[in-house]
Every structure is written in C-alpha cells, then in structure tokens.
Image 1 (spheres, helix red, strand yellow):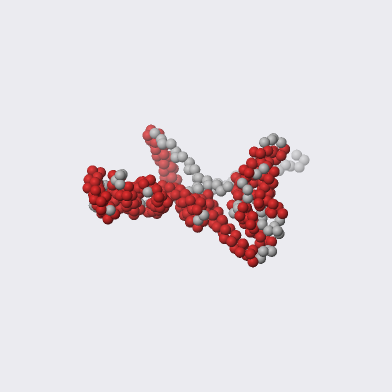
Image 2 (cartoon, helix red, strand yellow):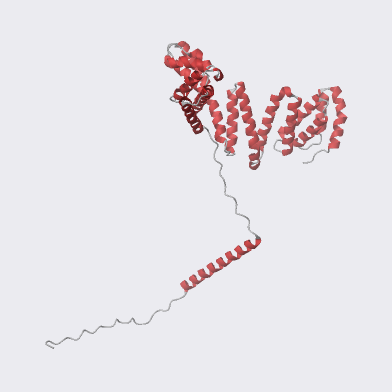
Length: 394
C-alpha cells in the first residue's frame, strides 16, 4: 500500500495547523480533508490521520479530532492490517487524551475487532478470534458490575459463538458463563413474580419457601431474603438466614460451624438444585469451615472432622467445575532423512517394485501358456496272482 512520505505529510499539516487554531472546528474538518487528499483506501487515510495527530501534540482538541477521524477510517478498512493497526493505536491515544470518554473508546475498540474478525479470511480469523473473545468477556464483566444482565448475556453468547466457530478448547467454559447469567436473570424475574403473588396470598407457606430458596440458594442473597422470612418459615431458616446475612469475617467459630453445616448438608443437596447454585452453596460452606479452622486454632478431633469435610467439598467442586475441551495432540512429523538415506530407500523401493512386476509377469505367462493334450494310455494297476492252493495232506 502506498503511503504519503512523512516529510510531505508534515508540510501539509503544519501549513494548515495555524489556520485551524484560529478558525475553529470548520477549519479542523478542512484539515482532515487536506490530510486524506490523494489517499486511495480507507486504511491509507487512517494511517495519514494518525501520523498527523502525532504532530499536533500541543493542540489536544485538534489531535483528538484527527484521532477520531483515524478511527472512523480504520473501522471502514478494518480488514486491512495497516488500517486496523492505525485505528487501534488511535484508540489507545484517545483513551489517554480524552479520558472522559474512555467507555466510548472501549466500545470502538470492540467494534474494530468485531469488524476485523468478520471481514478476514478463515486463516486470519484464527488470530483475530482470541483478542475479540477477550474484549467480549471484558465487556461482559463490566456489564455485570453495572447490573445489566441483558448485556452480560449478549456479550457472553457472542464470545461463545466465536469460540465454537473456531473450535477453541475454552468454548465450554465461555458457554457456561453466559448460561449461568441467563439462569440468574430468570431467577430475578421469578423473585418479583413470587413477591407479588405473596402479597395477595400472605398465608401461602409453600410459596414463601420457594421465594426464600430462590433468594438464598440460587441468587446467594441471604440479606435480601430476610424481608421474606415469615412466622410459618421453618425454625432453621428463621435462625440461619439472618446469621448468613452478616460478613463471614465477623462471625465466631460456633456460628461458622452451624452455617457451614447448614449450607453443606442441606442447601447444597436441595432437591432440584442446579449446578450453578450448588457451586455457590459449596463455596459458601467452605468459607465458613475455613473461618472456623482459623478461629479454632487447635488440632483435635473436631478440627480433623472439619478438615476432612473441606477435602470432600474440594472434591465436589472439582467434579462440578466446567473444564476446557481436551486439545487433540497430533503426532510429530517423522524426522527428515539425509539425502543418502533418501536415495537408499528410493533404490530399495524400486527394487521391490521390479521384483513384484517380474513375479506378476511370470504368473501371467504360466496362466496363458497352452497345455499339450496327454495322449498316454493310463497304466493298468498290476494284477495280483492268487496264492497257490495247498494240497490236502501235503
């Protein structure tokens, strides 16, 4: 791709910069048009604008506008390596020069990698998929922190689709993440439905327990579940839900052991529990047991029992952990032979082919050779003379 020489570009830029400073945005847009004049592709325009922006280090406003224009042209020519690199470098500079709009530049970067992945060929997609997946998962985490579950699911689904398309080993782990978020979204919706139904039927104990299990087990929110505890709630739940709402590091060892047993024995084995919720309950039980061991500070039968229980929890968590798909390991190619060895094997193969051809020709000759008729009379079997008869009295 042809590029403008740096000296020429610097001359064009410096000749227009003084006009831009005095004339405002209109002149700055005119500068953009002047910089990209003569460029044949969007990638070339993005590169020229990036180089021009680097020359405007003292004029931040002009520099930001040039960088934005470079990003726009880079998005159009994202399939071109030069255009992609120019846009990515421009976005990095914009995050530094225009930090107030850092989230916007993050979205631009994600869109740039999306376009690069979609517009490249199959071989280049293998290199483009990993950065795209990382950005999608980063966006999903950011959306989760903001409480936007729809965005979390959308980013996670897209990342899982790209990983599945490229048959990456991490695809099961990525898919597990967005499926878990979809489950949480359904649980949040059901909580609101059950609360509204409970207002109409406050004496419905089964509905209240269903709501409590959603809050404590599926959503792991005992603090929010306190308001849903009623007089008809089982005693163990009425006592343990308020206790579980307190931070673990503020509990004494007796409460820790009580809650650990409740989470491990009852909640993690609750009928109909899904894998996501079971992992939450096991992790919570493990945290309480570890807090108990830190406070107990003695090696006795009680601590040994807790250690064994923690070991069982670790085994169950490992069994439930979603693992990457195993990678198929191809056998290494055979070592390269020397020229002498290759010549020896070639001669050996030719000799084997020659012998096989001779044997085949000999078999064909024997099969096609005419057979002379046999005119000899068959020999009669020799007759045996009877033994001489013996005379009587002889």
